Image: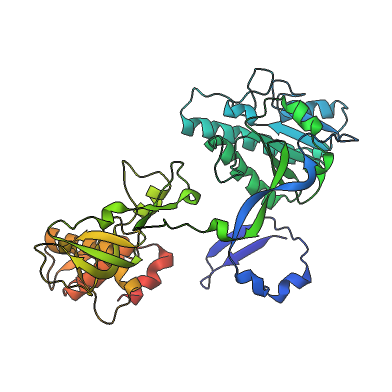
Length: 429
């Protein structure tokens, strides 16, 4: 089928040239089971009854493409052979593992987009451009209409909590592209990530794998690790997934060395228990604001050394020398470094009492956005009643704060935003 959609005024919204349908089990339409509310996570688990050293009998009809030791250098060469009368394989294996710089067991490296002299971004782009060409050639070939394409990578995914070797970003990008292809062309593509520690030739590894691994529908993302064939599976969170708090003393949320969210950990924070210097207060934290800066820090993408947390709310438990205007038991909010913890020390000048009608969560979301907007409109611009102000990205966090503050100051406010967010701006007046 094809689909064309228009908005109420007749303007085109989307045109879909081809829409494929797949059957669905009617039972799945009955609504989620009670267990659906439970939290899940993805784990790599061994495929029952299969190992990376199993012997396949009979072996599937497959050809290796893209490897120095392969049958053909690329899909174009394979198609030429098929047009010349060669037997169509049931499985085409496209080697991309050489692009990671890993040896194929013969001492050589090759495959899609091989080469490590290029900068990382350029290398990844070259690999994906070449891969897209090969995928399109596979799908367009009438001789391969009944075949599946097995895309071979090395070190593209992490199958354990503590990876032995780092993930190759270019190999991971290959998985991203092929996953998209899998959604568009079900049962045509398989991803297989080889163990970076396995130095055998690709052909030897493939000949040892059971044909069921690569030919059975449903197993479309696989990895070999430590002699096992593994596949991703959803599992319920258990106690091993919980962050463990230190046995004694204050703690804080810290990032891991690899730049992934799964490496977040709770660590001891002894500085929070030290004697208070002048002008500071000790807080028992109740809520902390989450900013995009925190996401960048957790992913290892923030420049320089930085700790999680910059704002929050809590209760004053101790007051340092020279502090006035605050008392033990006060509910406060403000700019609070290292706020992802149970106990923190903050500069008394950067916290303020929470309005009685606000919750701790509401108070924790205010400081960074509103102080940024207030500094821009008040300290820098000197905005006053009767003036006009244009707020760019007015539907963002700081933007919405700026709109509210400008109107409070009596200014006429104009704002920009993506059309999908105009409703939020109109709601702000």
